[in-house]
Length: 443
Image 1: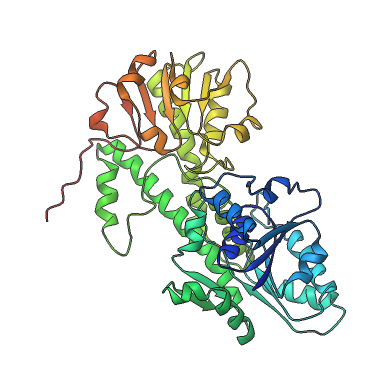
Image 2: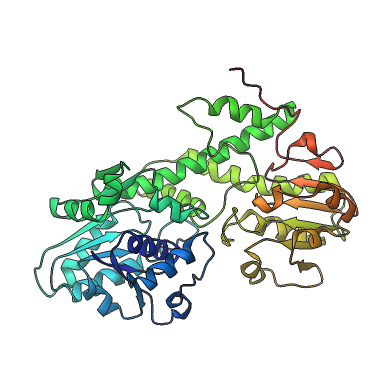
């Protein structure tokens, strides 16, 4: 099929590349000020494992192209995926101006049937406004459909998530739209991946409900970890014990310093706002936000408790991105933690495998903040090491070398990446592991 993808951001580019990999002809359009030169050479403007390889492959196969000509992109196909930004205020209310602009542009160029697909995360019933806007601005009475097809892409595994999805959710109002989606997603249907056909409103709601529930699981286990620490119980044993319950599951039950990124913080806040606009009190999600914010502050308190005085201490930090396998620092716990430590006068030595360039735009290098090219140089003569992101690179380390390089062998592990039994040569502190033991499973 010929498919237009509007927006070459994280969701748009991954969607465009993967749709091309499904043998569709894809035209991806961005705003005129966007520099497409790297994309046209097969180089993504953000780090995502496997994306560059798939992008280059489909450029060579002539299945994906990039343009800043929106008129041409709208004319190009009968299926248009809207993947533009929906930024939000502090209250959580989404700014849908970009969605409206695209709807107006589509309306003005409507010369044949088009299926307009919301891929951006939007409040429930946004599809109704898109329909109304197109009808207002269209120069003809040509038929069109507006559908919802939310993304469930995890940064760091987005390509795999698209190509091997847990489920695909599609919200449609006509059989014609449903048939188009059946054609687009036929490879998944043939291979047994579940494709859920819902209403557009339900589809829009599913996205916010799913992310908010996952955020709830993270905050819940982080709340329990504080009790474990006080009661001298290993949080991992508790997480394993409840995770074996099929109704709960073990995923997202890893205690740490909280969630970040472009989705969970934004979507939780948005879901609270959507509920309030409908007269519903989502108190539980407000507490999720509080617990998440508190984890960052409590981690700094833990550092202060261990080091006593932070001022002029040389503190190494491994991990700046909000999660491993991405360079995304949006809402990353590292931002708050480093800001607090810096204001308290600590000398910070920072390293991350991918996120340092973006981090430098927020915290430029100065007398108190230094960036290093590898993990071992970062800890040289350090008084302590803080682990803020669970990159595999940090899990596979030479502990003897680390101890020799550090001024003081103190590790404060915000992600529980090490087995405490193997850290006896260090002053090792973690999140909620209390009296640590491995769970014994009898079979």
